[in-house]
Image 1: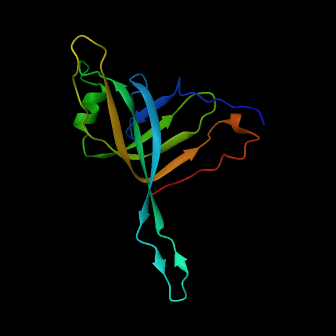
Image 2: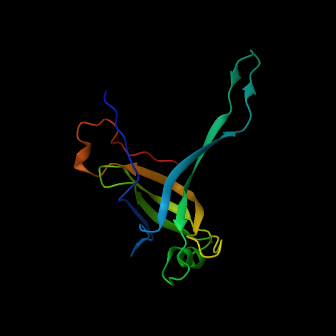
Image 3: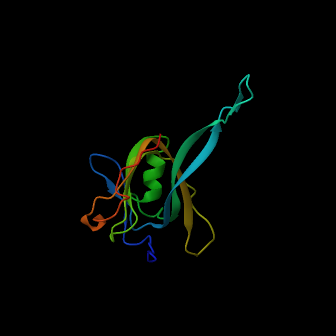
Length: 153
């Protein structure tokens, strides 16, 4: 097998359902990250066998964005106006054949401001609510065995 190197570039990041808002030009970093926590305690039975604790999976849509508080239709305003609401999102890391991630996330207001007269960025982290989908939608995936859709609750 040869090396395959993927890059996050020339992708898309949109929020909303009927008329999605495209914020692809603001982020300098975007990622979906899983977290796994124990769900309960291990259980020992009378015979001495042990059942390990279950696992609980959760995801976040996170990244870093260039601040755009001068733009009334910008990412920071969108986050402020939609704070604590659940909205659909779609993230495609690149146009070279990357999977398309779709789901819903809980928007929160973000930090605004920073050092004077410098380029300012803000980190964001939105909890994914419900199912998360990862699917290859491109014919570039012919011959791959990883084109199945995955979901997480």
